[in-house]
Image (tube, rainbow, N blue to C red; front, side):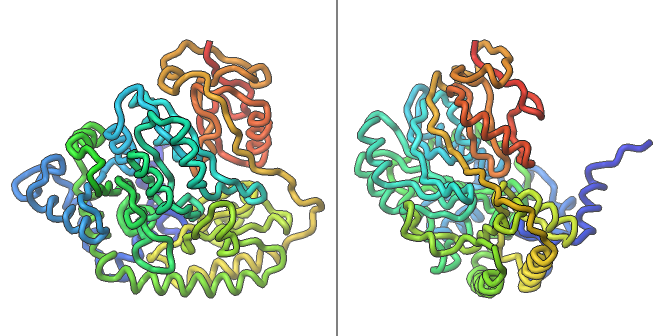
Length: 480
């Protein structure tokens, strides 16, 4: 029997014409068709090339790539911008390791992406965590307190930098401007993972950008919320606190020496769309979202994250393009809801947790997408039967204790224990709910009983946990 090629599977999925509320931001390339920018679709193979006369060189850009990066800098209002072809991960690695030396301490929001933790291992850094407020009924991290940032800077005056996720996966924006002022008061560097916020500059009705807020370096996943191809991202720099030559060196270390011209072309195209059409398309998107929200709120038992959370729990603003929706009061958990939307209505959401689902909308979405999503929710609710008690699981983000550094844990001798026997041992592995990729447990941290119980419960409900030794979570790796 012939094995099915990955290409064949992807083509089969493409032919299903799925309604996309997930990354990438070009929404099955529909925005290219809409704006008559289908040249990239028609010439993907033709433009797959390397460094030859006329194509410039990403790692020594003096020609067409240099011009494109300067255009990005002007449009996003940075002082320098660099194309990333190895995803935002390479930018996260570069800005962290370019701002620190081995053995340094760094302050990190605990709801950071796993790439931040991996940077600690690569750079041999010591993390000190700043914990966000938590919405335990929705399973969503909320804002980071500026006061807590200042408290940590006083407690750890040797910290070299602070890294903040802004906005969060669910669109939560803390008071980054106030945090930037505090960080700079202590003469530290503010690094921002703005992977989910490349679109923020398109409307005054969205949170202000990280650069506007005063961040020294910012990484954006252009492919997530703007129409670039997957992995296409940008690193922005401003101010005099950053050692720019070190950053350039780190970019060479963490990116391929054979960068994809397909990805770089898609970045330049996305930037052009941002400049030429972005504000108009964003205005249309926000209008469609407002109509959708006003209609869906009429459905009994529905919960949708909205502006009502602003001003509480260190939430300064919310990115309206992220739609978190729950039917848990109607006795359907997020995992089941995501599966039903896909299997019965051909709608794919960005992620789900036990509580609800997240729709990631972009300027590539159109009015009919929201109409179909609303119709699907109406239909699902009309068919639901009361199954009894509302699921009472509460989200946890444990306040973990560090035993040894993440890098030391990587190289330490390890053994396998039953999870019930691992309490108070030092973990040798990750436990990362995915998506969104925010670690519950990091190598080098002490295993907690409540965390183990929570992971087991989430697995039974359908959550995917990366880093498991076995799918049933019967064993875990610990430090000897």
